[in-house]
Length: 338
Image 1 (cartoon, one colour):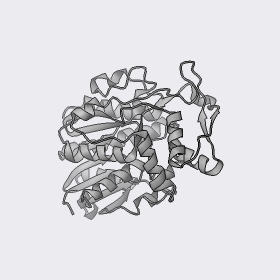
Image 2: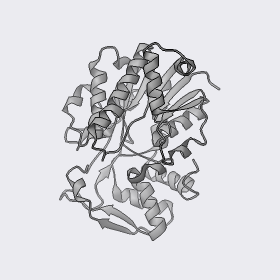
Image 3: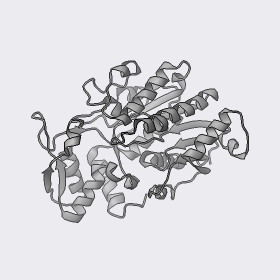
Image 4: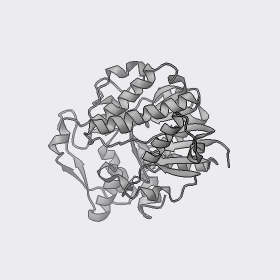
């Protein structure tokens, strides 16, 4: 077992549990995991992972405050000798409109942890989001100097944008910190996410149960039905990139797009699921809820030049091969087998 002690927040989530698994594969077991399990089935994502201790988020935030205030105690020892922090804990719902809650949970929580990391000179990799780019009108360039031009479409994206701006504006923080702008991440251990589950998972279930899949119609003349495009990223790639920035590239700072660098259509995605299930495509186009239409992104694609320049040279899976692994290795055998 490697001796580095690493703290991971959001550790039971889709990306978080994949990150812990990647660290386990690399021989890291001295891990402090933080999340909020509540009454969801997210606890199942922890069953196959190896770690030192798990803390609920509110317990951890109180502990963090005690440590910052100079208070001791046995629990405080958990935060001693940390060699790295991966901060993924956040409310990631794009339909959460309690902005005060998001400011506390996504923004202030991140500031508190960043101040702790800075005071101890600990490397911190944190989750920003592609939601900060809004409708993409101002591009998708991962440049801290350009973030003031971005206009997120929802409070979640705005909370992530605010922390990126905070890191940039506070002297002494940026060199230690790497913010990762994850695009459309999908894969095993997203089963607890409810309506925020990926279309890959929802589509698999539709095809399994009915033989068909429904995709949203387009409401723009320049995009056909099902031709809206997204940069889809398999969670295993997201995890490898995240761990790369903590362990392999400890000098890179600022924000980095984490995507495949390719824009694929929803039709591509649907056909990939049918192919992985060895079924003939049967696709219906359905009405998009009216409340979504004004805030719907028709195109996202992550320029990943800065990621490559930072030294990440691993292959990033294509949509077809990644869907095939997800469907054949996880969904067909049984969803909770990661």
